[in-house]
Amino acid sequence: AGAITADVDVTGNWSGSYSMSGPNGEAQETTALLVLKQTGKDITGTVGPDEGKQFAIQKGKIDGDKITLEVDHDGHTIKLDLVVAADRIKGEANIAAEGQSMKGKLDVTRAK
Image 1 (cartoon, rainbow, N blue to C red):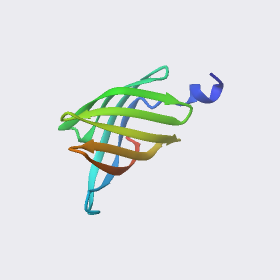
Image 2: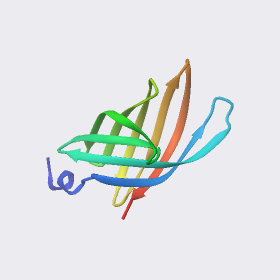
Image 3: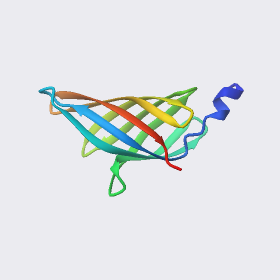
């Protein structure tokens, strides 16, 4: 692991927006809150729309500037493929539920 990896520590609260397109192409925009704890390359914590509704991260990894998270959302798995740049995390979410898959876009910044 080079010095670059050591510089990235995503521990903390990240808030921003999450937009999801449903099966019929309708877009839903909600808030997003990530509460992350990084230990080495492992990431634990919770993800959700706000403080009142948070879902546990089952599997979380960071590799360079790429973050992959798997979150259990009421029995469905949400897979997040994210990229961290300075104080911003952006990326895609994929949800498979009842045979339908939905895609979302996540854009959060580090809460001060």
